[in-house]
Image (cartoon, rainbow, N blue to C red; front, top):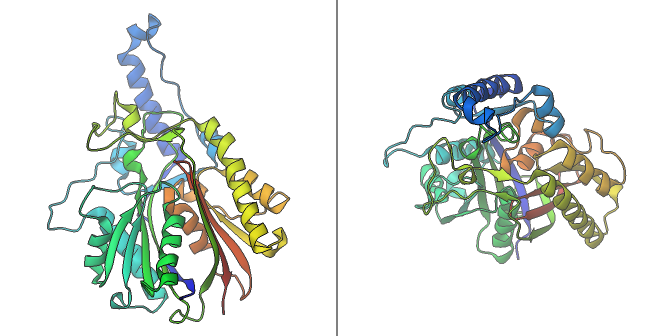
Length: 373
């Protein structure tokens, strides 16, 4: 039986960043146009006017200050309010596979691993570009990796579900090296004309190389324990699909883009995830002080603050629960991996931490790790 470890991670960040101020300017201009176009209906009380957004509102509600996007022009144009990503011919690599490959190459380089050393590819993400062929198989082909590949989608928890799946392959002896990628173009399913959520998401790609400890580089992360949990809820939902296609802007079809009942999500997910982590720590006989760091899902700063406090027993410092949400916004499955990638280099052998994600479904995943030297 193999002992799974995390050998390396990779990160690709889009070159275009959109600040809250830029996003608010475009949204408010769109709202003013919409209100002017519907002035008679608003005056008659038939529809409600679109309220303005503000930088202060966004930061208080979420902790987000900016986000990276693959297309800034369409997102900030009041006449478009959506990313415009040209379709590519079938003989050209798709954009989702392209950004996954970029993150994957960094992970492979950090582990001094060649593509032919890898046995399998998992593409675990919220925003799949198509139904088939699988994005993972396209990534596998682009990198020249033998073996097998497949896609999986558990919304914002896709990465932790992917890590456990990869670890299970290693434990069972089906693979010694599994590349798990999370390409997330979240801007494509965001309704930029919804004042309550127009600021939430950003785009990114991450990668995690899970391997048998017997072949891993010296500086790896032991996977001590993983747990997955799902509980059905429609409080975070996206109804887009081939059976009910939406217009690019989503105008008149808001349920075909991201929608959520934010207060319900907050109230229900925080205790669910906190309890899950505490139960795992009891199983591992880990005291709160034994966890040096929590790399939590980057969706909402207030949620992370409460979860960390319940787990640690005190208000967490930036050292104990780092955030990338302010810079990247919510990048769905990739958020906790970005936090781990950027805030784990200072660990010493024997120190332990937790990668944790949670999101639509509801879904939640925990991956407890220990730095090896």
